[in-house]
Structure formats: structure tokens, C-alpha cells
Length: 506
Ligand code: BGC
Image (cartoon, rainbow, N blue to C red; front, side, top):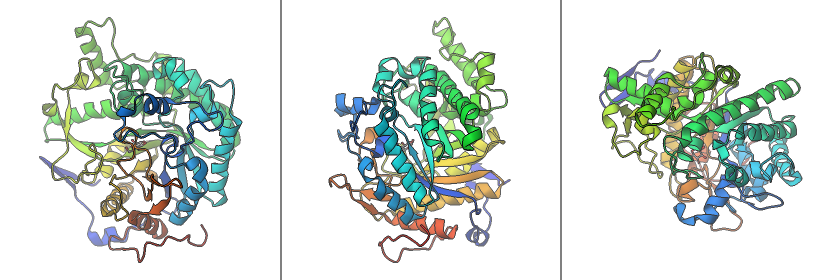
């Protein structure tokens, strides 16, 4: 195993020699792809019988919540431009395309009483178009766009979400599983629960700190498990695919080498992602032990008659444990972690107050266009290692990874970011960590949630002023293409021109 040297603020990996590194290649069956999400790209918010989802509702009723007061009403207009999107995938030469299905486009009532023919037809078109060019579709069932009608009934705070999601999942598997062989139930549970219910950084901005995120966590995990069992029992035998789950994991490293800071890392991981993954991937199941104890202790001290974190019954634990075929991770960066960094800026109660741990990113780490994004050295490697240590039996797919800039096609920062991140993947593979694939976020610029169109994550730039939503490849598109084509990372490669073509065979 490669050693991580942490001397106070600087952590580096003792790397293999540069010569060996440069000749490394990705395994033949390693999958390269790009990711997108329905609300961020599709537009056509009210086409046919589609109903409002929580992001339609938020942007329409509270425009000031979005940095540039924009909406996803048109976004990249992928509803109409999907053929151009697939052409871009062919230009890049990707193996697989990860996209999400909009629940309210498929089930306009949220509930499964009526399936939209137009909604099904749209996704059939996308799936058939990618498959025509031998690009494997990967579907995320839920990428943050709950039908508003279900939010009105409590959303993820209502235990009935388990059945609502399961019914929706069955419709998706039934209609698309003949051609789609990889499904992801949820994208980033913590961002759904903590940011949407326990804070104000994602719709529905409920800010039910210390309570909302915990109730949501239990219901979401059960909803995932029910959908997985449906796939397993009703579809797997005839469709022969896989069903997994994706969370966002940063790399959390200790600020110092002390036992306290190492423990703080464990607590932060429990807060950031293990709350949503231990029930599924750990040997014993259930929520993480220390977080469960802390939430219970603080709840009692705060006068709550029971813990704010509702635990699972033994039966529920058994039902949830083992319900994923792979571990999907979205990764962007990391931070240094310590109890000494905790500030009392957080509400009481809140899950941050429950753990009393803080994080810091260093001043000399490159700043992305997103305020939360700083480039921690080797963060993807560290995250992959932390996941593998926690759940050694699961293959990992990097379902998102990317860097934000402002407009402009000369995106050298993104180029460096991708090259460095893919070196991290090779480092992880060298250590025997079972990483099966890597999906760049994102195929193109899109609606970046509360940041609107101010932060760009695309390999292709999108002109949001142009009704045609013209897409133009950035420098990083050429670099990613070269990496996929050669299956190697050449740090000196420069594109000869910025003219994009489709290589034979794509
Ligand atoms: C999400 C994407 C988002 C990206 C950049 C991920 O957390 O899944 O939808 O655009 O990060 O913020």
C-alpha cells in the first residue's frame, strides 16, 4: 500500500517514479463516460404533461434564491437537442453516458396512477440514440427533482416516500431496463437530505436543522432498498443488469497526526456520507455507531423525548444491508479535518453541532469558480482509499468528477484537474482498489443549482444566450478525448486545433 505522509498541513502520496507513471494505462474494460442530470440540462419544464418538480417550483416562486435569478425552464434544451448531445459523446469517444430521468416527466402526478407516454418516448429516444453508437446508457432515477406534488405531501419526510419511489422505480426498470443495464437509485443522499431538509443549499430549502436530514436519511435509504429489491426480484433475471447507489464523498484528512483529529475524520465521514451508506454497504448495517450515539446523547440533553436520528429496526437493517451492486462516488475535492476547527456558527440542533467537527481548505489550493471547490492534492485517491477501506467488497464507479470555471474555452485548470484526478484513479488501481469506471462531470455547462449558470462544469461550453444553445468543445474536451483514445494520460499533449471530429468507429 502506498503511504500517505501527513505533516501538519501537507499531505502527499509517496508516488511511483515518474517514468513508471507515464507508461501506465487504464485497464481494457475500464469504462469512461460523462454525466448529466435531467433538471440541469433538459429544459422543456412543462412540455406535454410534465408537472412541476421542486426545482421548477423553487425557481418559479423564489427567483432570488438563484444567484443569477435563472431557471432550468430551458437550460441546455436537451429535450430538443439530445441528438446533438449524443453527437458530442461520439466526438469525445465515451463508452457510457450517465443521465437522470425526471420523475415528474414520467409520472406527472408523482404517484404511479398514470405514466406519461410522452415522457417515456423522450427517454426511449435518448436511450436508442446512444445505443445506436454503442454508448452504454446509465440511468440515475433520482437526481434531486422530486415532483412538487410529492413535496406538498412531505417529500422525504413522509415514510410513504418509500412506496412512491418504489412505484416510480418499477416504471423506470420496466420501460427502460431491456436496454439500460446500469441503474443508480439516488444521486447524493446527503445533498438531498442535509442540503435540502437540514439546510438551505438545495430545494426545498427547508432548514429543518438536525431533524429534517435525519428523518430524510432513514426514508431515503429505505426507498433505495425497496427499489433495489424490486430490481432484484422482478427484473434482474430477465434484464441482466445492475443496480447501485451514488453518494458524494470528499477526502477528509486529519489536520494533524493526533488521535483526536483521526477520530474527527471518522466522525466527519459519518456525517458526510456514511450516514447514508453504512446501512447499505457495512457488514452490520444500520446507521454509523458514533453518530447514532452522539445524536441520541445531544437529543436527550436538548430535551427531545427520543433521538432526532430515528434508528432502523433489526428487520429494516437486514432489509437494507447489501442492497447495492456497486458503490457510486461523486468526488470533487476534500479538506483537512479537526474538532479544533469546529465553530459554533451552526444551529442547535444540527448534525454539524452533533459531531462538533470542522474542516479547512488551504489558501494555496487552487480555487474553482464554485466557492466550495478548492483543489486538494490527490483528493480523489484519498477518497477512493477511504471508501475501499470502509467497504472492501464493493467495486467502485466514479460517477462524477469535475471542476468549475467561468465562461471560455481555454480551460487549462480543468485540463489539469482531470489529468490529476485520473492519475489518482491509476494510483488507486495500482493498489488493487476495484475502480470500474470514471464519468466526467459534465458533458456540457448546465444549470448549476443555486448558482444558476454562473459556474461552468462542462467539457463543452453552452451559449445560454443563444436560443439554439450552441455547444462548443473546450480544450478539456480534446484532452479527455485523447486520454480515452490512448487510455493513457499524456501531460504534454496539446490539441493541434480546436476542430472536433468524430473518429471512425464512433
Ligand atoms: C451534483 C451535480 C452538480 C455537481 C457540481 C454534484 O454534487 O450531483 O448535480 O452539478 O455536483 O456542483
